[in-house]
Length: 410
Image (cartoon, rainbow, N blue to C red):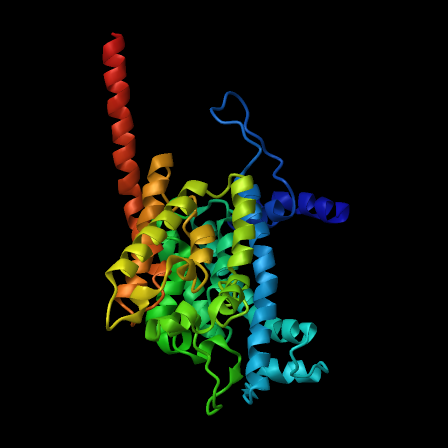
């Protein structure tokens, strides 16, 4: 590593002001700070002294996502192997051909599942970073500002919200849209109103619904015509038949959902690993427990209220809150999306209101509109737009209290 450090030091002058490649300094700086701690420190009097910079904050979030990434690979393969065991055929894709060329068989053992799932996840992961990273580099060079680590987390989040069979060109277009429209047009990291990963996910859903909704995208196998097998997620099954999650399969299915061994977006199925991520974010104070608590309270309140109201035509009204928490993207969205420090509320009390609004909106979209059973994405994006207003009212209230207190002192 010392050789690499010396090489970067010798090339630095080429990228600094006046050098032949000074327009590409943001790219050089991004590589340098990704590999090593920045050598610049703040001099003089500063109002904040903290060892936690943006790079370390993003690294903590990625650390919470790493177990989910590995599980996403395994579960993607597991769901495909289950379908093949039920009579489905492997998809005629380069992933399948490479899998067979590597000497693996379509059996549900650990390594077969992991490798087959990795052949679908890793290309999506690479394309996301290549497409979104290109936008970051272009804007960094044009604006002549540093390329920070904000996209690093977005590059992890977006692939985890996608189905394994989505075309790679759609992944690229979604990543470009999310970074460009969701962040760069607002001024870059720290200026964006919307969560870039969710912006990309929303774009893909509404632009290419056939490849990101329905039953087939969630399992990397061709199960058309296979009797007794469906690729439907539990969320869509609950929307069409609430009894499916109210007792037809009992606690066994709930625990499968909790651990994540069900079809769905590659990284959103395991509530257990999301809880592990929540522990990491809360322990390091990177993620706000107030936001998570607000979402939880809003979910429990709304789901319980709708349970009491009931419906003769909509079985989703009867789904209890503990099922809402283990199906769909509820856990993943609550812990990794809603707590985005840029697009969420900043004030401490505002985070509770912000999270509560997400919980209420997510359940309302799921239950009241069963044609679109997943409401977490829209709920977070909706509350992203209201986060500045929530903060405004709490800041103004604090100012009034201080003015009143100061008037009494005088």
